Length: 490
Image (cartoon, rainbow, N blue to C red; front, side, top):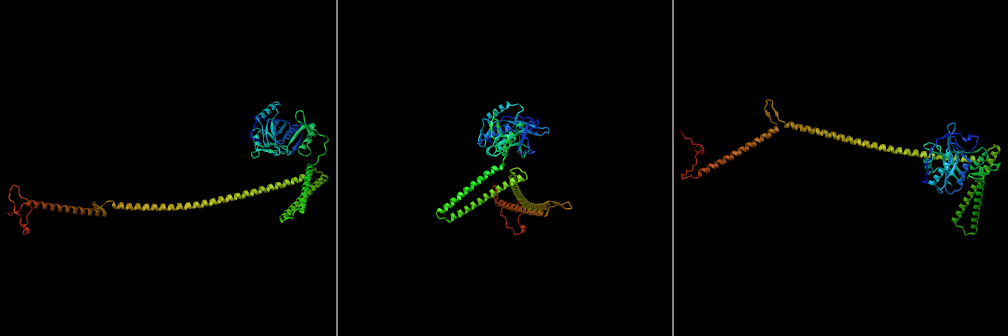
């Protein structure tokens, strides 16, 4: 589907109470497929269904589509159901093999056409085709359902005209499965067309060939039904006939190839060892293919015999053995899916175990790192304690030195200096005494030198010179200093 699909506004209409068509004597109702109890009951008018099928078959090279008209209702028990009584084909569209685009012109025309219908005939959903793509809702289909047909009872109808498959999709209201394919739906018509209705639904299910029809005056198909219809043939009979013809054709082709190889071997050049080995492998492949074909043909015959026996003895419907075989194949596929699921679960458990082991290793590494950090913290604590002890010892030494330097007094109140200070004071006193003595000697010497010089100096003013001093003869005769008077005897 294309990302450019655009719609107009879709009005919201509350479901009204109404009588279900399968409980209304005016209608004949036949189920298509196997509607489940949990499915939303969907009733489609026969002419509307044939018109949508004819629209889908008109061009199988591109996707086609349109809208479905009808109503959303609930019965006397409150159970909801949908009725589709008309459809409008989309025109002026743009489509390819895998996309379908509603243009503005298409939507405007659909809106104008819908206005020509009664007000109670509203949009009940939309339909489109998937030629040879299968029946499903793509991402763009989900976008359309989410944004334009998102009412609780809106439905979507998908037709694959190449694979002859069709189905309705409904909203579930569950987050994990918002839209689900229904197991089947109901086709309704006037009670006077019951035989025509049953024949058409059987043809749509592939039980009988599709009857011929021609377009009516309003574009709706008219079914040409012969009464009474011939007894229906088993659905597997035609497929088995074509399968046997295809198998015979393959066997003839293989025999022709084998004859050609034999002729080439007889008239051709001498064979080499590689050619001989290739021919041997080819002969084995042909034998295996023949054996497989023989087994398939034998199985087909056995199924036919079993089906006839069961039909004659137990009164089963034709094709019962084929249905059983299909059920067995489906069970085998379910067992395979279950085994794959268990294998995936075991793989998930193994991955979970590995993740847990990795987490345990990470926890162990973290524990080792934590222990290492605790050891380092312990060492730092011891170093801090040692530093505190060293600081305490240093404080004690400083306190002791302060006690030694602190002056003290004797018991008698006399100041006593500490021994170290006393030594320094004594040494200072000695030095000061030596300095004073030296200065005294120096001044004495200087004084003697000044006295001698004054004695030798001539008197001023022509006074007679003094006599030179005499040599003292004894200590008693030593002269006295000039500044002292001479002692005379009385």
